[in-house]
Every structure is written in C-alpha cells, then in structure tokens.
Image 1 (cartoon, rainbow, N blue to C red):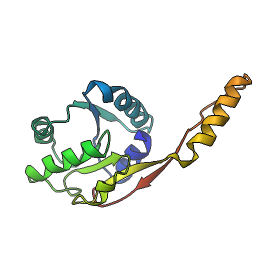
Image 2 (cartoon, helix red, strand yellow; image 1 turned 120 degrees about the vertical axis):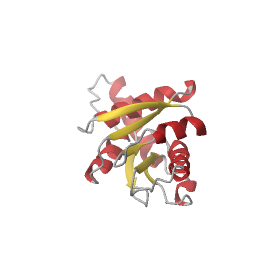
Image 3 (spheres, rainbow, N blue to C red; image 1 turned 180 degrees about the horizontal axis):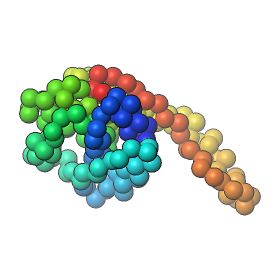
Image 4 (cartoon, one colour; image 1 turned 30 degrees about the vertical axis):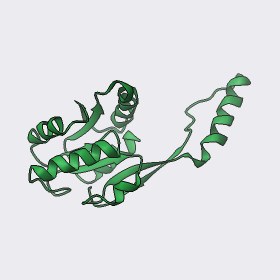
Length: 157
C-alpha cells in the first residue's frame, strides 16, 4: 500500500514525501508496516508520528513548507489532515498533496475528493489458501500478496 501511494506522489513531483504513522497503540504496528512499504518505493520518505488529534494535525501542517506529498496511514488520518490543511489556508493538491489508504466511502465525499489505495480483499481467501498449502507442503512461499491493490486517483493528489 505504502509503495503504491508513495510512487503516485513522486510521479506527481511531490518532494519531500512524508508518511504519517499513527501513534495510537492499536494502530502503530500496521502503520509501521505501511511505512516499510512506503520506503520500499525507492523514494526518500520521512516518517512522522501523529496521534489522531486536531491540535497535533494543525502543528504538523504548520511545519510544512509546501510541495510535499503526504501519505496518510489511512483515509481517516488523511481526512484529519485535509481539515487541518484547509484550516491553515493551504490548497490541496496545490500546496500539499494527500493520499490515504482503504478507500472508505467518505473518501469520495471530502472536498477535495481523497485519493487513496484500495485493497481488493475478494481474492484474499484463495490466495491465503494457496499460501497455507505451500507452507504445509514445505514449498517456498516467496512474496505472496494476499490481496491486490488499486490506486484510486481523485482530487487530493
């Protein structure tokens, strides 16, 4: 997810690219996994730990210089940042581009509409069965993706 999002931002000339990692205990591990994916894209990525909090989002936005691309941990974090950017008078995507993850229905209702990475979970059960079968048989698993990903490009990037 992170690699696809970061490549999208880099292809649009966004520099630097910032990945937002949630500070909340229950979300942090998945956020760090998405950060590892983001860093695998071959583009320098700066990580920022952020709690899901309007004041923290405002402080983060206040430190932006313009031209950045922000990969938010998920669509909720991206929406939090869209609000903070709007409150600070920054244009999205003019000043800062933002992309989320998960493609929540609300992503289409924000203004600007949120670009996001959608996981397609419909193929996950079959792929997981294949992975388990390989493990049981002692076969090499390699990199088996459990789901496919789709970039949903909207107005925020």
